[in-house]
Image 1: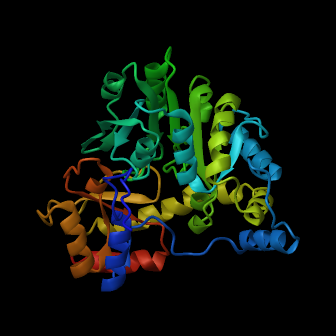
Image 2: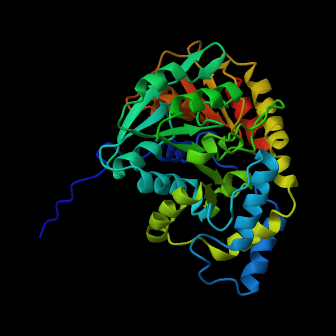
Length: 384
């Protein structure tokens, strides 16, 4: 008997992150490609989760998440951004931000709906749209001497009567750009007097540099009423493998979100939720995160300044994009392979973040690494 499964995602294969991480391991390269820390989280967080396990908190929690954790999230968002979500009806704990993004799309996007995505775009967005039967509509960021920016006039021009959602990401992976107040206002102007929903991916909300504020859409009275806002404890607390995040949205949107959530994941790791709730009583770990990562960014940028790379701005996230045209005329993918094999440092081609690969001569490094890891990478990159 043979099976014939017609793929729902014909354009999806092995991700560039898997490919480059495997090559880095094979060649003994410093892996600055995939975006995760190589250092441990706070032992107090591990202890908080251990305490929950030892206290017997190991069975199913409520479908929407442990109330203590949802209360802590509501308190944090209100203190930081001024909007009070109802913890019972407007906050849902998710199995990481990727599940939150998929669920947001599946609950809101119907077959034939258009969803505007801004390229370069993180790789889970478009498959989520396609699984929902939606149609991705691409608008490319512009890139100049001052880095990347969103051409809001082109976003506005992409809106049609079929537009159901606009997906945004600030701070932005892979470019490291962040929204300022004018970006938020431009988005609000586009969707005003429409039924368009917003999915705002804010997983790097606590990594914004040089004193700038994070422009969460929760700050904006208009946009908060139509937005699914996604965040990630994994990014904030250096525990990407725990896969826990949350989605905040108005009650009517959350009700639809939870209809999908209860059937694609149902609920999320119980002791981790209790541990996070206990750990969040001290705001210092997330309030201090921007300063923590800015030191790493500055260390890495200072080291790269001695190479022939051209540094683009890194206003947020833990990513640094660079132009390499003074070093090589290889394609981005081939340059990353060469860099991994010959120089011993792995990076990610930014072209991989486009639906139709676009060559800009730009690659992305991750600096969420121990200082000694960054220094080893910089020693090798100094050859350039």
